[in-house]
Image: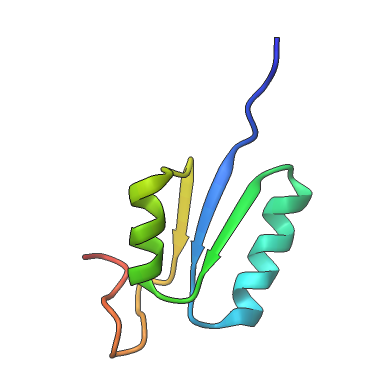
Length: 68
């Protein structure tokens, strides 16, 4: 029996914080996809749905927020 690798999508405009989370999830065996804005994250989700999404609720004012 094979096990599927879990995937997480990280959405954060601040690269340092994204990299910190990415390192943690990768060390736990997750496949990580990083995006610095909600628009590119949504495009990615439309093609491949992740098992989990970690996002910043308050995005910079020129982006949609993490709620809707």
